[in-house]
Image (cartoon, rainbow, N blue to C red):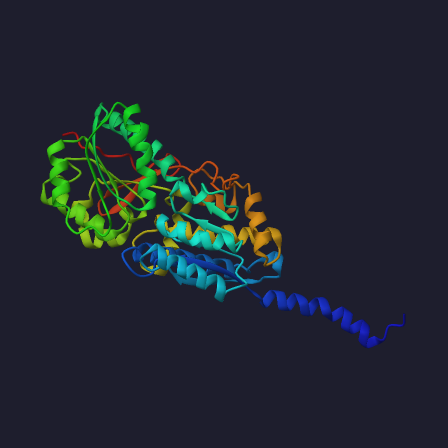
Length: 405
């Protein structure tokens, strides 16, 4: 075959043209979180972390295995119900057929509904949501980066009991519970009722369940005061309900300097709660969480605060930040914008560097169910108008304070 000068030049130029096209390409990832309604504050915090991560990836040269392709974040709002979350997921899949992965939906009830859609579309989906059901359905495209609600429940009370023993020389024996009936709360409370309380030799003296939004907490707080517990578990999921409860505890003279309390989930550790409740009524409240920035994230927190004007980097924002980095890592490994290959890359991850360092245990690997191996419960405590990490040791900057009354 005789090659002309034009053919040779064309063949030489083709890889350059392809490389330039790939370098300028965008790879779409999705974020589906509540941006309106009672859970909007948590979704907005995720949005802040995700947007910062996308900018960081793109400013560092994009996805290098794909010639510097840039990430593009596609945002959808779950609004305020499981039905709307599912509808949003369906629109997302229909309108953005070239998505390679995504993350959301904060509230477990929303995540359960939306992942029915993403699983059918074979779209890999990362979540911080807690409900055990999320990764208990045999799905192959859902990855749960948090410890499950049941795991947190089994760790939280024993850990709190040990903290009390260390601080005041005795463990709580009587507990009261206030919780909503969303999916994560139901998962959390099941082992508490089934065996955790009994195993620890504790007694439940008040057990209050409500459907959010909460309209009046007076009767519940009266029941708790009558039961004279040593500790209150607060299993709630949004800022308005947390505010109502914190205000009512203060009204009944049951602040945490008199009655220890531990909440669970990101809603009890957001700046918005400080704004509407005040530092005095939050002081001493502990919060169990699936993740919290530790000593390794000091520089990231400073940049986040400067960028967003938020007073700290917390649970929701760091999860969104690291989920973007995890998707970027999967794309680097497979080198192509193909959701099936991204999914396979996520299943194959086993890291102790990069995005793994954004978790307290420093390990990034998902098991056959899609649950992150080694995921640990974290605890922060409200001190001086901000939540500070007190557990585990890998992130703790303060020791827990327990009232001695």
